[in-house]
Image 1 (cartoon, rainbow, N blue to C red):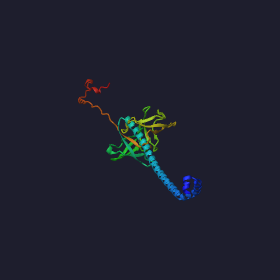
Image 2: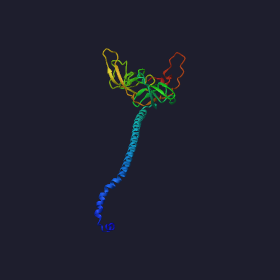
Image 3: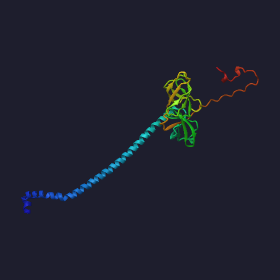
Image 4: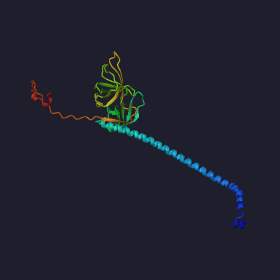
Amino acid sequence: MMFGGHKQKHLKAIHHSLTLVVYPLHVLANTPMFVSNWMVETFSTNSRLQEENDRLKEDNLKLQAQQQKLVSLENENIRLRDLLESSLKVKDRVLIAELIAVDLDPYKHQVLINKGGNSGAFEGQPVLDANAVMGQVTNVTPYTSTVLMITDARHSLPVQILRTGQRAIAVGTGNINRLQIPHLPNNADIKTGDLLVTSGLGGRFPPGYPVATVTDISRVEGKAFIDITATPNARLDHTREVLLVWTVNTPKPPQPDTPEPKQDSEQPELSELPEQEVVQ
């Protein structure tokens, strides 16, 4: 029957019928292996996905950290470019320094920078940021210096109104965003928005550096002086890099020898006086 069925194909229908009957048994017999393979594949896939997910999270975290660093470096680069442009505008010799500490005492406005005596810093040296005067060096060690800001209540700075040339004193108030200009008479020509610059008096700050902008003027009738408030142009609570300034003094031309004064009481003739002493 098997030979005849194989040659004549008479048992094909029976074979198909038996196949249909036996198929569930094949499926049932293969089920454990199928389930086992499916479970292995599923857990393996989940494990790979979990590992890949963890790796991607780590990569993402690293990239975010790098991005933050790049943003910080970009901002620092911008600040340094501003300082470079500022130093190009300043004719005096300058040195860039970085803030390394801020005094936490709310009544003291002073910071510590990373340049000291070994870099040439000295007490009384002017300190600027990219915009205006920040303060002056008050204490120097070999590697660091303390800078007293212009808003400190102990600090005062000779200034003048750029528009009129009127001289005044900018006094710190203890408020990081405010200066006071005392002792200006009630009839002084000063307006809101006037720029105050260093006057050069006092011998520490060179003349012409921006200091503050007048923001409030109060004239009280019968009062001798005006109440004036100004806002510093320097970003005192944001700046990270500063400029130490050395004033370049123009050498004086040599003076010719003055002739010996005559011993007699007679006045010398005009022709006997040196030429540079003749008043035109």
